[in-house]
Length: 285
Image (tube, rainbow, N blue to C red; front, side, top):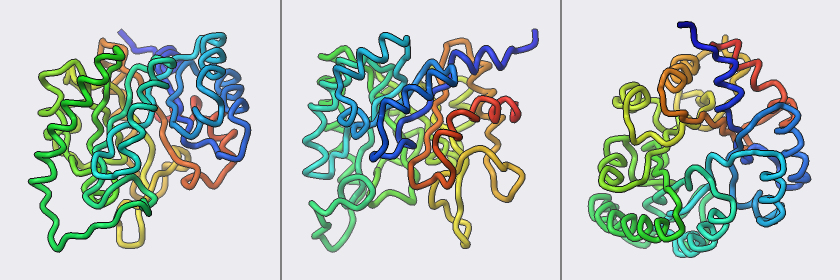
């Protein structure tokens, strides 16, 4: 039986609000989602705060828009961002996402851009000790999220961002942490495209919660430095996005695919990116 990719895309495509500029009306983003007949969005905390969580909830309910992810909790190594976890969970309780993204934080503290609240003051980086400490903190956060009836999605972070983003860097290490809990793993292709477990995990694992996708921008030394949109895929060094999306659409559990790029990744008008996204994906498939 031939798979109807258009119907699957209509139901399962999500767009993350990270691409929307902070200085533009967040309501316009929702209007574009509706105009594009996209039924899901991912949200980040700045967007939620700019919109207002209760007002945003009303708008999403009115237009029957599902929230695939709220980004993010965790950042256990940073004294500022770690304190925001309770507030993010409170917002998530109102917005009822499929998953709340969990990122562990870098060896040197919080998320990029580099947090100015914390600097590394030790001579050597002991990742093994740090991971043991974080494993215990993750369990406590699992318990906290369960009180809100929320599901967390632990995201492996590319090892090239271990200092300022996350210190659990492989699918296997994250899967080990969630296997005994009712929480999932979020796969972001930007971070996991080189993971040896990627294909098998996307095709078969019951612990997959969400696929976040984009193309990858490499620097002149062929190191990943950022995200690209999915147009112009005929140039050099592109992910096989068609393969990964088809893996998800061949599953039987209604996993969503979430397009995630940041404002800094986009040279074009973000409105055009959203409006053209469905057709660009269908051209790949």
